[in-house]
Image (tube, rainbow, N blue to C red):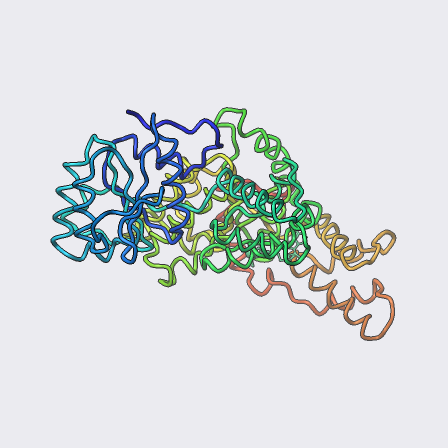
Length: 507
Ligand SMILES: Nc1ncnc2c1ncn2[C@@H]1O[C@H](COP(=O)(O)OP(=O)(O)OP(=O)(O)O)[C@@H](O)[C@H]1O
Ligand SMILES: [Mg+2]
């Protein structure tokens, strides 16, 4: 009797995985998750829908022993793990037995032995033992009999189903909820990236703050998500976006992004090879790499997450390879999104390098190839000479851009952007007079010049003038002068390897 997809619900990725594993007939599963209620619910739903006729769902805990979802308890005391496995062995008929926090019991040899016996007994009979635990502990002698997987955070469908249930409960308790499909989709997107429990907290906080649930709740949901996702340590939700209009110059890259945007929005209806996968932006510090990544996210209308390579390698999240893979998988569950690997050269160096780094690179290459369509990768790099050649050749990026210090017109563009940002209308201001003084400047230095000039005028309680800008500019020594050698090195290295992000020649 094969497991079937439930026909009434939008199937989530976790539910699908569970269904496929149960269908494969493997009788012992080990699911690593801190979300016990969620796995219990997925299993209960699976028992109900996956099979031609519903299966009983039994759950076991050290305090309660075996209890069936219909309220039945076992006749004998089954709080002891051995007694619990005996109960499963003697049980007549198909069923799912959910063993909560059973990892401790696996430290006893006799329990491991009984579990191995159960493997034979349960195989092919639709009798399943499912262990759930927040940690992975599988003794060697039983590892071949157990299918292990880690429950990813809930995907769009799972969050939406949860949100709809919560909305129905809130409505029943007299609260106002905008349950229109469009609002539900916006709120689901806002909650994506959280566990079910966390999504529950976020919803309650939104209700507590605004009294109802609807489009007005989105800022609260996003803020809650920012706090919670950031707590994971390796992934950061970046709330301060930038529009593509805030990026001065870099016309080639901006045009490219706007074209890719069309393809990305059509991702579900076009061939996989046409769906944009990602972009690698490398170049001189302060010339707008980070800014461009933020612009990609708003251009693609997606939330932006940053994977922190320093955290991955800090050892605070377990072994780096594992932490990296987990962060990538989490991002797939959060999709659609833009995922940003900042200073990618710090984590991913040559595949020839031994051990962990090489394995992380190999994982990254495969992952880029296989990852879900809704994830666009934006990687940035400064120390480009550290990047392995394969990252550029085989890194599976659609394009590799080199961002150089801005040319004359680009700097004017950048000055104008930053003046406007501070409420100054640059028309007729004569910014062009800065062109000569600012040769070789980075975008960050142009911004700094505007900030200093504005500050000086503010302190003297008057409007800022071009004179302020000219005077400030005279005092700034640009990075490209102080670090001429490095900048020249970056340039010559990138020239043959990447596409220039701007038109024209900088020399
Ligand atoms: N092309 C640009 N247009 C507008 N502003 C810019 C541009 N380039 C840099 N800036 C300003 O300089 C700031 C710093 O730039 P950004 O952080 O994007 O540089 P980066 O290339 O990521 O540098 P780093 O290598 O140090 O991380 C930006 O926040 C922005 O305000
Ligand atoms: Mg940066």
